[in-house]
Image 1: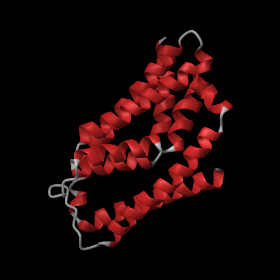
Image 2: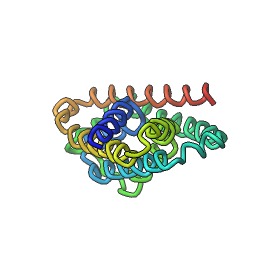
Image 3: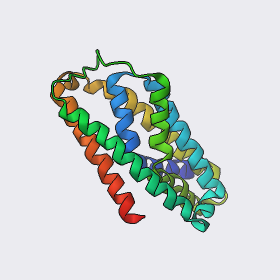
Image 4: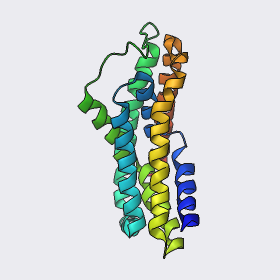
Length: 201
């Protein structure tokens, strides 16, 4: 049981650490110290739900009805193009200092809705959590629950570590130029993901 739990933990963590829309958003909210707990909570809870669906067999439904993934790919590509554009605009505003201690407050609802959109409109999340983890879990027929628990634990640990660990980098981001670079990098990542989705659709 412990071995199955650890394998679920390791596989999930290896998938989550890849740079993506979720991680970039969590990192930036951590640097801005805005609704960090609830952003991490929303990401981890969403992952937990998707992992549970995948291990429970929902991956078979997605494989039988691939049009669901196709719809998610195009919708996600459009959303990520728009989100990347927003960060590209911010990156070009070199005089707009976004100091972590003096960031403009965003509405809580807007932050959470954007967080959920970056999660549930991103097909990569479904491919990783529902399909891939769901498929791997079939190797542990008798201990599948422990595999799911390990994967879910990794998700919660990673997102909260990223969100609160980002504060270590705050001294670096007290310089406006650092925020410009971060916004530019996020824009490129979002556009890269959007392009990969459009090409594979």
